Amino acid sequence: ANEEITIVRLGDASIASPFTCRQSSIFPITRIIQQGRCTLVTTMQIYKIQALSCLTLAYCLSALYLAGIKLGDQQMMLSAMMTALLFLFMSHAKPLNTLAPVRPPSTICCSYMVFSVLGQFAVHLYVLVKAIEHTNPHVKQGWVCSGDSVNSTKAKEDGLTAPLCSGPCDFIGCNGCIGGTCVSDRDPDSNFSPNILNSVIFIITAIAQVMIFAVNYRGRPYMQSLTEHKPLLYSLIVAVALLVGVCLEVSTDFNAYLMLTPMPSQELKFQILQLMVVDMIGSYVMEVVASFLFYRSACMNVTDMLLRK
Image 1: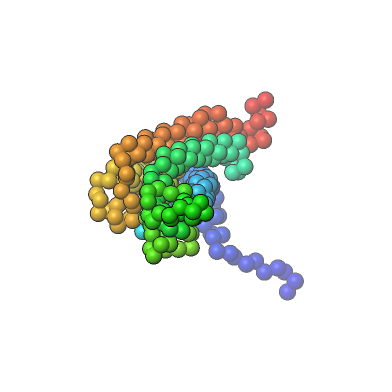
Image 2: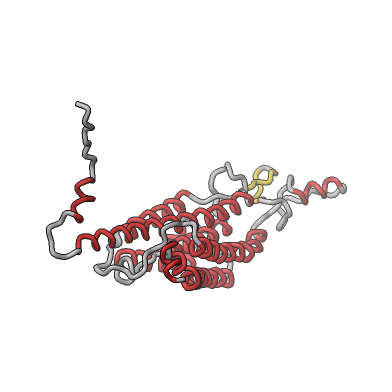
């Protein structure tokens, strides 16, 4: 009666089976190590992708909020569906049949992870800042003033006739006149109103999200490479092609469905396209540099370091 009752938990048989297998080889042991490393690498990828996505979206939403603008429902739906599909395909990566000679990093708090995340975020941040700089002049050209705008108020104080809807004005967010009142599209709590700044930030943020998945997929020597993982590869190619088509306005109907404003000039269109290319190349270079400088040291534990000395 005093003996302790052994409770069998779910999964105990699966854990013990490789070590009780009646075979002449240690294949079950190596297989479970391969699957464990594949799971660990996938988990590390998810941490990196989530960190970069949160940092990029935080700046994107902050910039839009300060301008009194927000993303449209169709834009957020497309971005969410694209992210969900990429996560789904990435989680279905299969481990390789050979055991990798190097173990993956055992913690996210290592020099490789920090340098990689900060370096890639610096590239995405630079591209977003430059995109906003290129877009701001076109946003101001679209403003018109009314009798209650800043220009009109100053004119009244000087004893002049208040102009009605006369050219660009200094009132932030002026979007037209209704009954002599300046109508603003820059109220974050108001209904969504498409504008060029919203359209450009959506395109740049979407391409940054796609590149975050493409660059941070580890692949070999732990799991299938990106070229071998066809569902993920094809989905990334389709996403990039779709965003390039949106930027070049290949289908005006699709852009209208996403509530994107037409590009005001060919110059801005190609400036945004150049920034998309910079984001692709820059984030990839940062990941390669981080892997070259810090990945091997991040994979070593204390025992490996002592043996190396």
